[in-house]
Amino acid sequence: MAVVAVVWGLDQLTKALALDRLVEGEPVELVPGVLDLYLLRNPGAAFSLATGVTWVLTLVAVAVVVAVAVLARRLGSWAWALALGLLLGGALGNLTDRLLREPGFGVGHVVDFLRLPRWPVFNLADSSIVVAAVLVVVLSFRGIGVDGRREGAEQLEAERPSPSPSPSPGEVDRRG
Image 1 (cartoon, helix red, strand yellow):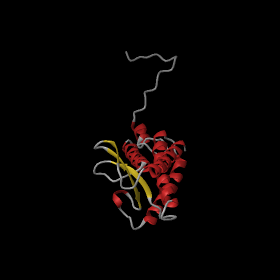
Image 2 (image 1 turned 45 degrees about the vertical axis):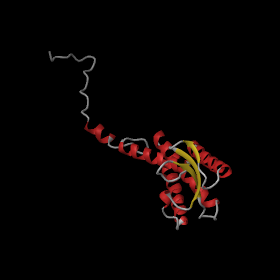
Image 3 (image 1 turned 90 degrees about the horizontal axis):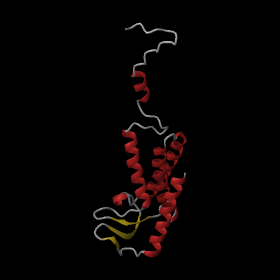
Image 4 (image 1 turned 135 degrees about the vertical axis):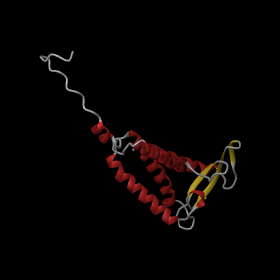
């Protein structure tokens, strides 16, 4: 829950600062040739996809929040807790924009303000979602389940030869 609160809080704080201090369409160079601050209100998803169906993106965000909340009840892995916390915090950050920002409830535009060369403008919530996706892929490839169990661990244990019984204290080893 702490990861969710930190991600959501930082996302909303940085968006408020961007709205307060940046002028839309006027870039502020942070790292020359690498990173600009560039205020943009985005009605769509990444790469300006689905700009005409903002309400669908809102429903998708709600579905992600519900799915993560349900999945979180099975958590038994700190790595999965981190991944799902990042995903939930990011989804809530952008969902907050969709629900509360102009032009209206459910169709609000997401505040984006970070720009890399040849990449769409994004925000901290987007970054959190991407990092979460990478963690989910890594955990899945490593066979670590949400509950913390390793996939196939039971099968490996069953295939492992059982150790030979040790002689009891009174038994004499006559192999020799």
